Length: 325
Image 1: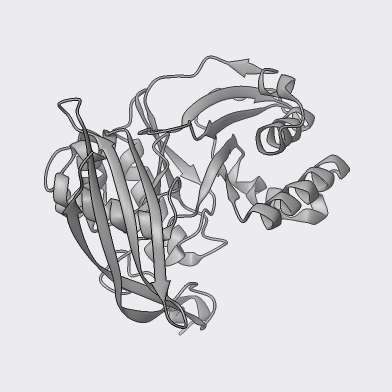
Image 2: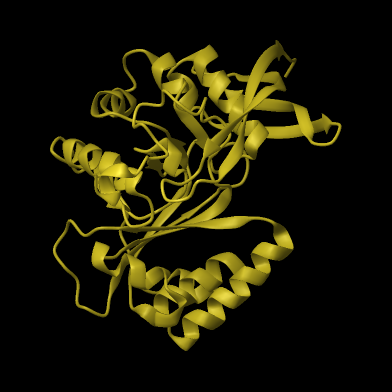
């Protein structure tokens, strides 16, 4: 038996091991998505290949993340369109709007290396507002579905992500675009999918379930069980979000909403929380729910196909109460 065949993957591709995925999406208010060929993904992640400008920018961004505790999203997607000149990137910038919302604001750019890092610095540190306008191009309508296929980071994403992206790409159109994408975390949820500009991340997806999600049809409970969460919300709010989707149905995904964790309690570690959900119903009227979340137990699961270490995966029970608006 070869080493490759002996490898036990951290994901079974179906979600039948490792518990529910609720509350596992990375938290960010700003995300950058850039077109890079898969053969360059590793170089883009390798600091030894970075320009001096990029080192300086990422140093300042690292200090900002440490100070605020809030990260940012960075996706690399494989080209599908006519190539740009070698010195230009296709770049998408997603930023969280103020107040209740259903999706992030998006801007599109054609930028060279210098322009890209200026944009990142401007969007995250507010250094130069002009960088938010330079190189901007019209933004297309529709949604982008990013499937992690980065097998060099984790074999599970290669094995399960590549077939999912290929199957979905066959039926994609100009309004539902499907991209082969680099690592964005959650290997044990492969194939894992990020939906933009909604900012939601999904676990153990199939072509059939993704088609239902795109069309908002079929059994929504099958999808609510696979919702990792929205990057706009913290862990507790992501758990409440998934259970609200199960309770309210498809319209919940597109409803303008804010979710706020108002209380977290526990002894050695937090084990229960209260989340306030404020949203606009399909009839246009506002509504409010309060979610009471309890950690029921914790599973030990592997986070990587290439390392034996396990990590705790909390599992939750959620109850709701109606709240006056």
